[in-house]
Image (cartoon, rainbow, N blue to C red):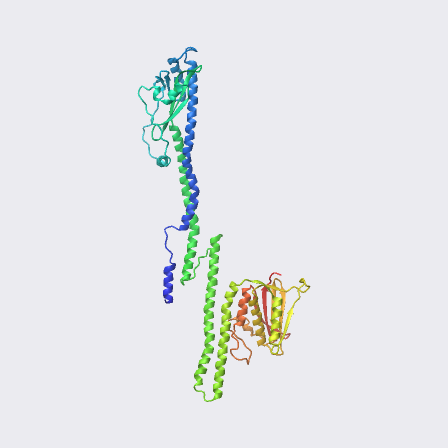
Length: 550
């Protein structure tokens, strides 16, 4: 598949589906609505309150019935030996008491006959019904909602199966089990179904005179006020629940909007970059939160990747250019060999080919080192590197292996005030990778050797400067052109002494030094050594690295 085809495939692959609502928004709403579930559960708990209120009403009716029965037993009997109530005094007493309590009261005699019914008493209770039509308002809207919700809750919470209450003509005590129990001397109560929404409570107590049962007094009251009170509580909870639900949904949408939209923008920008589009990461750094941190991290990461991509492209172009030179030279030499007329000319051409092969080998080796450098720096674990021991070891290796061809090599390490256990000066430590730091020293020393005469001098100095370890490599070579003090660290740049064979160096050594030093958080500087007359007497390379743990 071509590169264009891959990009098109990636476009389809990375294209994000348009969603009506974000899954993250749904999760935020679900989490926020979870707490409202408990508030909604309060509506179900109201039915438990209704049961409690019903029990309290029964207790109140029993107390009222006992008070009335006590009054009848004391004031509506002729003498202590009487076995029945005097009806006229009893009616008068009940008229006054029922007028206060407004509770239907019935009195049954010992023969089970209904003798007194408060409905037949003249209590002058007149109810006026407002029949004037009125406009529907918000309260009626809530009442309709409350009624509908109540019907649903009643279906969910099935009401207890109760006996249906019926009025019968010519009532007798035998029609009411509680009245019969009262005639036998026991208090009793019943709850019956009156309508779909209301129940009726009946309590019966014996009317006694000196523990002698004279009849049964039965009080009955519906639970309409209890139902209305419960409905009012339900309505309040529903209103509060709806208001809380609306606020929670709005806050959830606001919260989701402040999180989902910027994250989605970042994701789409990342997708656009991954398919080769323009790098356009939205700048959300003004937000003082994690989204802002993510935006800054994305932006920094993108800039770093762009620099690395540009560096790889430039490196590839440089490599192609550098490899092309020896290959062109080899090709010319090979083509010219056909026209060589003498052995001497053929020998020269073979020498050129041999040098070009060596140059290619050297280039490939150095290029491989550069390519492997970033991977090693990013994956290797940094440790404390003893720079004192590292420099001493490397100088010993040079003196041992190249003693006859080396200039005079001098190592100067400034002694520290701190001592080790054995009394020797404490070494200098740098936090990093020993192999890469050793390569830096090796490249700088090799560079100094290449510019030095055999009887010249090279100095390697080590000391501490503030919180940095300073390594200096001085030579007595020709120095560095003033306008090339920065360029010498570029890839494949080579400023060689006159007379040195072309292609002997790849121009990557100092570039490797710079990459390693900067990866360790340090700096490398090139400058010329000057005498008192401001004349160049050599080159100096200074490396500063952050000091490690002693």
